[in-house]
Length: 275
Image (cartoon, rainbow, N blue to C red; front, side):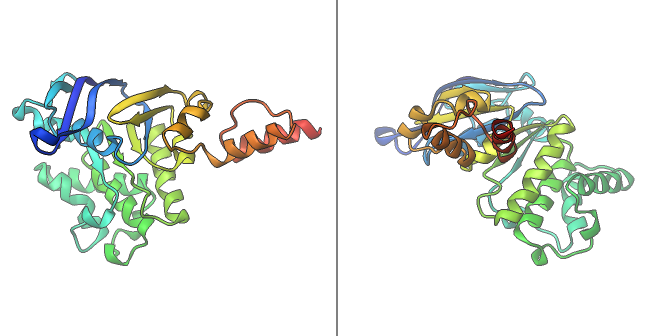
């Protein structure tokens, strides 16, 4: 598991420091799909970078399967266990073909060619990109590029995958492609920490963390979290569009059950009311 114990991380000079993460304690179990949401400046991206030792706590500690990120000798092992995918896929793609790009990480692990080929094939298959293995990455769509970036991390076989707003720069089709890949990885048992500002994306997670001013203000299953509408509105967060629509219908007298999260649930509830 990943454990944070009273972690503090600040930016700026000592006289004007801003705490991006403030006395944060948290445990993420192996295989969980955790969504992290919060307003701009709430500390989400700082949390992401703390999870694989790109940032080191100024106070407190982060443990990855028992390894302390403050221990420089453990950084290599920690970063193999906790893969990172960032917002802009162009910043992570370096090779002239999809296959070469995905192979870059395993090559740097010093693996034999046969194992590298096997990992590349498996990773591309997991994100449904094997048919584009010879394509130049710059000729791909945004969603396809992000899936290549994900495959490059998967090929290193991490135990956890941290994704920092990976769909923020994508069109709706690209977002659907990335979310389908995430859902597939979740079924394969990989732990996914998914930072997003799209509430409907968070609704599909096992667990939602809501951050505000460097702290976690809500932590629970999506259905429960999005029932806390007043608190979410207070910190300038929305609720999933379908949840908002269901709430509006309920206020108009339609006897819908509580906290509907997606189109399928809403359609099913309306169908039962009409039959």
